[in-house]
Image (tube, rainbow, N blue to C red; front, top):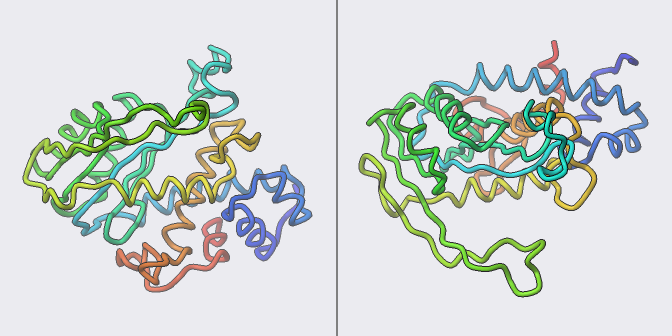
Length: 274
């Protein structure tokens, strides 16, 4: 692999975080695809390590959680059973936890959508907080035991359970079901009913699909390897938290949360490689 300069690395990363895939990045930058893939792997691991170290002891009031669907290698029905059993193909979910005030992405986890992943995810969320919070999730049942296991009674926990109808006539293949309403269900503690919401974290789903080619529907840009999928997510969230100015806040989420005092440049992200 050719040794890239800091400027070349920054140029590649800038292309990747704006929603381009590896091949598009290679065409735009003139750098070999395999070189870009290695940079993604190395920097993705460095971004994850930095997040684990830096995003701690958060004094947040409200956390919203959600899960976003994607797939790796092939869709669930078409993926080889052996690869599905090994967690290397088929449906892949990204669990996300967002600070509703600072818009900071507090935690994420790539994997399945079962109780085991819910447990690991909520343990990580709880480990990053320094005070009692109001937590809102959707109606996914594994959250119930996972939140209790991670927080005990030291949380104000509610679920926003959405009620869905049929998809629009003639659009059943590509259109989601129509949301006919939502029910606020208090699980434990004393959450403020007016603040029971998952709107901010659900809006982040759109940001993810716009910023990562691997999440774009109805294309062949999906991840072929679960490792690259995870690295892409880590790269995206480090950039989102530290480099991308939120239009409403006028600062980055990391600045709003008190984790940094300035807007990071792409070069600062690249410097995490050492």
